[in-house]
Image (cartoon, rainbow, N blue to C red; front, side, top):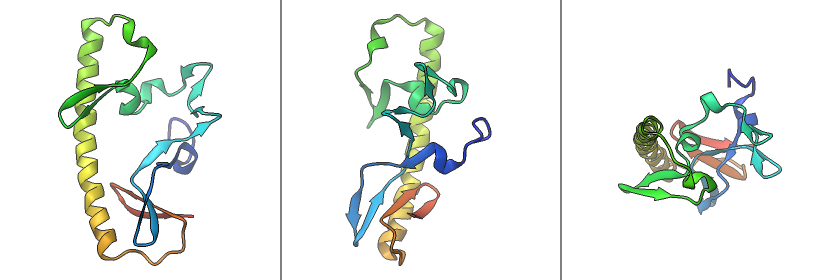
Amino acid sequence: MNATNLFWDEMVAPYPEHLVEQGQHLTFGWTLRHIKDQCIFLERNCCTVYHLRPWICKTYPFMIDHGQVIVSACQGLNSKSDPFTMSKLIQDLTSRTCAEEKEEAEIAYWYHIFTQSPPDTKTSLIVIDSEGIKPQP
């Protein structure tokens, strides 16, 4: 937020997929906002926050799911990478996986709290993230 001078809700939106639990629409986390089907930080095909981009962007098109490396479709996969770049990618991917596992555990904790005592709210969506239960306006 400091680097972009944007507020949290100007940069992110609730993750678009949700489920209904105890009469409430829930989603688990956030996504970068998009304008006209592209990330708000993309201008003229360049990332304006490249040096601060999130792990999901740093490690794209790779992710680790249950110990397996998953590769998404990407035009850049046919280009060659030097050993330093690949080493950095592996470090970032490992760090991302550890952070995601920690976040999943924290979300599970808050989801358990929600199921035991859902908030009395009339909002259309509740985001449960690693920090807590957040009814959206």
